[in-house]
Length: 380
Image (cartoon, rainbow, N blue to C red; front, side):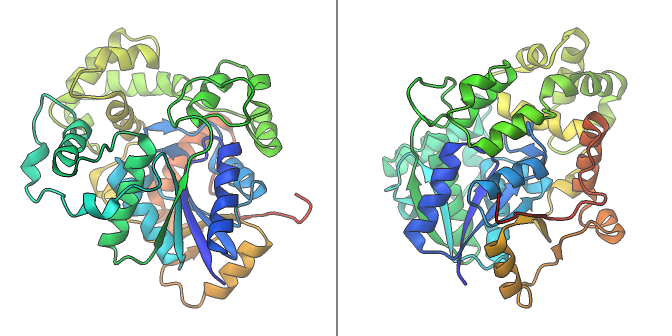
């Protein structure tokens, strides 16, 4: 059997994701679609609306055959580290292809990679963000504009794949419908961005999203529970107000004295939205600050967050996915984790387990203890 891999968040799974899965399978002829999916936190430093098990089920119902968790240490990272973790997992699962959505499927990734700077100081200025400096440098060197979210991720997928030995054949797929960051659901279309869908959900407008998500996603969203930063703000605020700056600075990426700015803002901010507005600067983007907030909330230490994936946490599979797992299990070099035993919880899975336990405190739904992979029945 041969598999095509996808790196995803599915926050939530929508019609565009289902279309991507169909296209990936059609264009490659793969026997199975394997997804490396972020767990309970996503790349921009936000808690996933639905937990990893709910989202895995919607992905399987939408055409995925095997869903494996992208660990927290890779999931809540800038694009380059997010891509590196996802590529490593798909390669470990012996996928033949990596399919990804992009605004410009004809992008010359090889040319971009051939013009990367060799001096790390190139992006150490403080008057612009790292992303702006990086994109500006590549534009000057190659004339290629790399300024849309999926194009940037596609570039880092290609770069991670090259650095890992080009184990995956890249399959760029043109996005269908709205742009990645579009904030509204356009009337008369069956496609909308995850950003627009999340905003509609949090505004309580489930009727508006019914036409842009599959039935399984709509049912999961109606059932809930849904989690967002506003619900977590009281706990984060308490932590910031009661912790010494020296203790905050021990967490991952809490550098350059930002801990003092975060503490001051926590005192006067009654909501997470207010907090973000209070700490935002030209140097510190909302995304960077949200990730820093997520590291603090989850008490993520540098030693934990700097680790590359070491295991394959199986969240669910279809009949084809189960067949694919059976075909590769004797040659897969990483541990396949289908049940969170004590050894895994205390070792490689410790960070993911802690993150899951914090979500359980809010929702009452266990995330690792006693959970086994979802098996999609033929009737679903």
